[in-house]
Image (cartoon, rainbow, N blue to C red; front, side):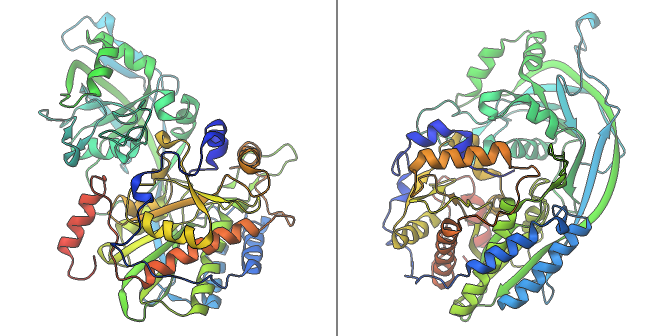
Length: 571
């Protein structure tokens, strides 16, 4: 789910960028409107990083899959290390927050049939599961049935009042199937200018938003049209990700509404559907990009069914805190996921444990190392929270559960920093900023980078929407400003070419595989440089009196403003 070594995903783009190419204006301000304290270097322990990463990624922990013995050992180790670091239990005297999970496995899929209630049955379309479409249910029901649900083409499936854009305008979606384009209307732009951030994908472009919005509109089903370029991955990724067991955080009684079925259809299948309705597919795509687009009922119906096997289990988020000295009811949060994939497809040598040393034993160890350093320096005015979340690899489930059931009120959470997979390739002159230009936290980052003598490199593939694919996003979409900063790509030794080569090697040979293992020969200097940057950021926010907000026009600004208006403490 994460932004994994972007240089490997777009090496040519990364090599062509400079530190100032297409960085938004908000990452070049002077920060005069905010209280941004100066912060000294942290007393950070490289030995802590080495020892914890080595232990967490050992075979003894069996890949740290939630719900396994390896997962339980990870939680126990983190509690021990948090205590040693000088933290206090962060959940009302407890170290953990229980995260109830459910696993739903669909089976016995009927074809997705498209019919014209008033037409010739011989013209009906039958789409095969996996080949033409995939679908799942988020509902804990053993049978999923979609029957004669009217199909409505809803463009990009966006309702964004702050952008004066509503693809559902004028249509009642109750019981109907939404046919939706992937990404957002600005896809294909060459710059970062446009109603939806230009070529930088907004949250409105992510399939998660599209399914959520269809549920809010009362739709029975939502089908996103897969197109490789705007999706940023091929159909093989969709088919593999949406087949087999699907894990979710269990829904509470007051959970938001949802569809009966969410899924994807191949672009070729969508073209068949649209043409069967007598519409021009390319004309609809063009219309959907224009302001004022109206949904188009296709006069066709969709039907399918499948059965679900349901398994429930539990895991834990681990929460430690360093209480604030002056404003203890204001919180700065640090997040990293402790889980990985457990046992996985074996390597040629038979090794079947996905140890997850880089991803994300490094980020997990960073929580402990940062906690140690902050405790040594003394508590800040605000409380510092260190949240190790579970089930990131299964869909950001631990982070999403915490954000939906926060221990510390979100309106009193100033902001945060997410850490996911540190590079162990030596120091870099830069850091990669994922999602720059979104919030005033950019000004804290600029000050911290200046103090460290480093620069910001923009995300080389903003159209892929990587900001929406790691744990910080669970907080961001609920209004809490969050920073996501990754390791640099301009290495001190070898420059961008060397950085791209390292990232490519990791992605192709170790990422999500059994060979993401601890190596005693790793160069930790770059990791420690990045860790010091995160230390500065956390301490700046902890000492500041300011409440950084999302920038005007950002998709999360309205949520934050509404929370602040309701809250008597915070913001």
